[in-house]
Each structure stands twice: as C-alpha cells, then as structure tokens.
Length: 496
Image (cartoon, rainbow, N blue to C red; front, side, top):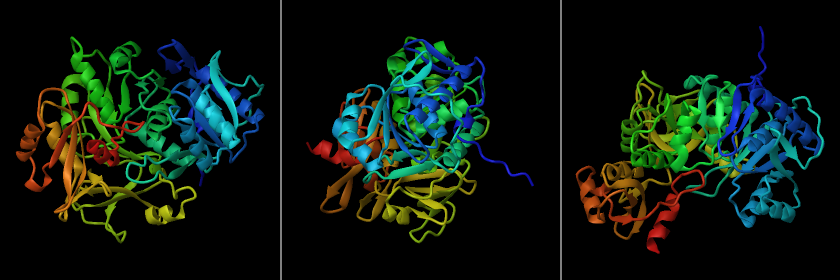
C-alpha cells in the first residue's frame, strides 16, 4: 500500500513558467510563476539568514501585495507560523497583538506603528518590500534553502472576528490550509486560465485561502489591486478576471457602482463567490440581474481554515437563503448536549474534517466549550434540509429573545432590504423592560423612505413580534476591517 505524503504550503505552488502569478495594477508589476519560484526560494533563504526557524512566530504587517504573499509562503517554508496583522492598527493595538501572539520576528513594509510596537515589545523587526521582483529583507544576503515546512506544523495564527465576544487565537496548521485550499479549487473548478481579483484583506483567512492559495495552487493569476469600487469594474475588464470572492457588503458596494455606470460592466466573470457573512437573497437577485454572472454563497470560519460549505456552480442547484452543502467536512446541527438534531430543526452548527483545527491557542476554557471528539461548535444556529443544504438562522449570541421568542436578525434584514430604498440593513437587540429585548434596525438608504414607512413595509412580511420596534437611518453601518457588521456596537451607536 502506497502512503501519499501531503504537500507543504510551499509545494502547493508547482507552476514555474512565464505565466503571470501575481499582478499589481497600480504599478504595472507582474510576477511570473518562474519569478515567483525564485522569489520564494530567495525569501526563505533570507529568513533563514535572519534566524527564522521551525516553530517561530512571524508577524507580517503589509498592505495586500506580492511581498505579503511571498513572505507568508517563505515563512511556511521555514516551518514558522505567520501572523498577518491589519496594517491599519495603531501602536497600542499592534503592541497588544504582538504580545498576545508571542511573536518572535516581525516583517513590515515600513509601517511606523509596527516598528514602534516591535520596539516596545522587544520583538526583532525587519522591513520588507519588492524590488526586482524579489523580497528584500534589510538587504541581507540569503541563499535558497530547502523547504523545511511540515504539513503538521503551525502555519497561520489568526484571531477570530470577535463580533460577539473577545477574540480567540486560532492555530491553523499547514495541513488544514492545504485541505481547505483543495476543496475550494476543486469545488469551483479553478484552473490555470483563471484570473481573480483580490479584494479581501490578506490578514483574513478568506482572502488568503480562497483568493491566493486556491489560485496559486491551480496555476491561475491573482490580481492585487488597491480596492476601490470606482475602478473595480475597469480592472475586471482590463485584466480579464474570471472570478472574485468577497463579503456581501463589498458586493453591495460594487453593485451600487455598477448601477451608476452608463452601461452594464464588461466582464468575463464565470462566477462570483460570497462568504464570511450572510448574503441577503434580495442582494443576490439584484446582483445577478445587474452583473449577469452567477453569485455563489459559501460558508466559512477561521477555525475551519475557511470554507465549510458552498452552493454549487450552475447547472447544479444554487438554493437562495442557504449556504449550500458541506464541502470537505461533515456538518451537523447539535443540541446543547452535543447530540445531532433532526433534519429541518434548529441547532448549533458543528463541523469536523481535515481543515478544522482542534483547539484555541492557550485558551483551555474556550477549547473545552467548542471542541469535542473532532467536532467544532461554530456558534451559528442553523438547520439542514433532508438533502444537505444548510440554512443559517444567526449567531447564538446574536439571536434576539423577545419574551422567549427567538428572532433571527437575518430574517428581519431580508424584509428591510426588500424595500427598494434600502441599500444596507443591520438588526440588533434593543433592551426592553416588558419583553426583555426588542428588534432594532439601522439602515442605509439609496432612495427616499422614513422609519415609519420601513416599519410598515416589514408589517406586510413579518409576524408582529419580529417587526422592528426601532428603525434608525444612518449614512453608513459600522463594520470591521473585513467588512463584517459589528452588531454589538449598534445599540451604543444609536443611543448617542
């Protein structure tokens, strides 16, 4: 019996010809696969010269671009765990991240905040950038070195989004990333002629795995623009993009931009993917009507190295309001005692499989609460149909409890978004002396409407107990750095 050794992250990149791998529209820079292979070898050698070894924790602070991609894969080739951090963090936030993650080396692209935070935490720091299509690390010499990565080694340290509680650190191994990457590449039929636009930040598992790793593993091209809705559709046309993936809020912004154009955008998109937050059915339909490309909703979490389920590409059934069927993992809703609930009944969604991690880092209490026998409880409430399509109801801690009635914020948001004047909607619990909690909503308009009109609109679509008791119109809804709505901040924002 032949035992196949799983590849390392460095070994995912097998192409080595002149086909473009990484493209930067603003500078016109294009890195071929041959140049990328040389850059990865040289970067790994330079990291070795800096003393980066197996088991080290390397923070990466840089804007989306080739340097960040190369640094991540080079760190994996050294057997180190990378911790990509949001370059917009201030000094205090960056210092806290470095300290919490116990970073041993920091690479940055000239960030003053990163350099200051490194000095305060006594973390060795080096600047990085691109010159002659090769990663430069303080101009120190470094010869190519053998791939020291291991499929079982920690490859990525990421914090959870913390939308309902204090963020936890997720230790993702190379094998988890490889499993998730393979599922995405296979499920969407990615190939060497595909071109994707990278619009998600690479300090988030969505952009890093779905956009970059899945594309490079199949020999396609990743375009790394500075994301701007005003130029996005021009970039899609000029680079011949065949797909991209983003959160629903970004799809909404791009849809708005497309509707502002004198004619429908030119494109070669064979599909568009939505993940990391619920996709309202209304947005799904509006997007497809305008863009004329299939929009496919998927479901992912950091703890599963991203994707856990997806609706399939046409001609298979894409079922609106669901996140599709399991991809590469088992999915089952559980009751409070970790027992599966029957098909069609609500339970807390749990997953297990090769992409799923087995613990939180240095947090035994959170690990005990969320992991058991290979299963991970996601914190999402959902139900499975008899044929395996998963419908999400809401986060366990985001469901609104009105006198014992549990209300899904997603259902109320769908009702609000069905009004033609509503561009965005977010629903949250409002404390109430009589009912415990009532439904509150904030909306962003794209036309004329009053809170009273919007409440009346919901009355035709929702049971009385689900209707918003408070509707607030805002110029924008606060979101995190990856585009997720920060529901826990909404009550305080409205109260001001």
